[in-house]
Image (cartoon, rainbow, N blue to C red; front, side, top):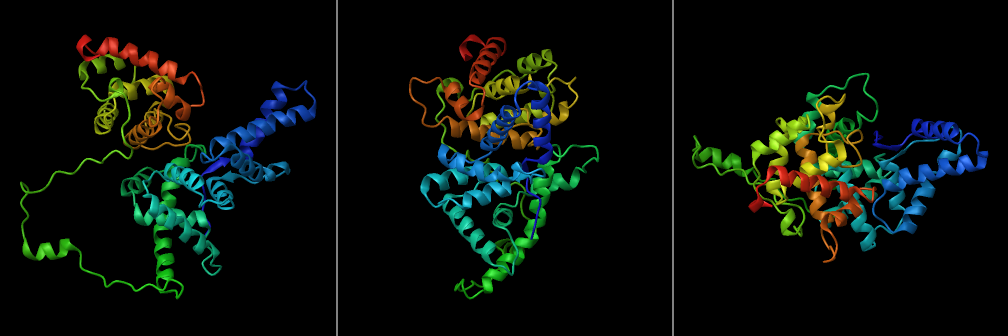
Length: 387
């Protein structure tokens, strides 16, 4: 099975970089311009790698960029990154932890640590079976699709047709989740094959009827009043934010007025309520989430050409809204998890937003912008007692 993996660096990208360097640094010697191009390519690829030690990152980057020395370079995708990682000792705890985080981010799912270890080992075994013709990354996606089906996202792919004029970057997110729907059926065949293969040596448990089938034979008309409310999802990471960044109720009217003054699309639904709900569910100050949108996208002005698409990911999670164009509910969930994750282990004398900055953004001054916007929002939206 061969599938299209999300591109990290394409021949078009390298052409644009070479063209830019040629025009901007046309007076420099050819070897110096080549160095500038190579450095730019290295930076792009290294930003997309798991959080491995620098030496491992350099080795992987060098291996991935060998093809770009040719006149017709092959693209670098997340599949190629994963395969390069498999050539390391990925079972080493530090590498496995970094690879685990990377896979979760790329696929947008939550995978238990032990389940992930088993997933990787099984993906390697499947890829080694020549009769299946399945690559390891495809097997990982298939396992993730089986265990974490993400039906909402698959529905989004079906409901939102892709326009011909959209760029490959705009189709990036939709293509990934369409791939998941395709791989589900393939993965069923894969696991069926492994379940009867002698190497498994496992006794299959008899299939039991679902509890819902048994219940339906006993209760003809379930009581609506007795139905349990849907449980809110628990935060993925422990919350180590200081009190100043924990959730507080804010005036919805003042918040809307503030955002409207910025001509922000986020003042409208579903964006406003979705961000507020994500803040409450994860015990994060709601104005911190909005301040991040202010720093990243100037609160998404409605007059912007791509405002509605940017509003799907105003936090620029997974690098940018172009690379990861999802839904506001998904991006709000991811940014909340990222804040909680990146806030862990903060030294007592370190500003909490500056600490998050170390992993959230490449701009070392990102935290200063977020802090300035946050404090301005507090002054205009919250009362003195609430600050």
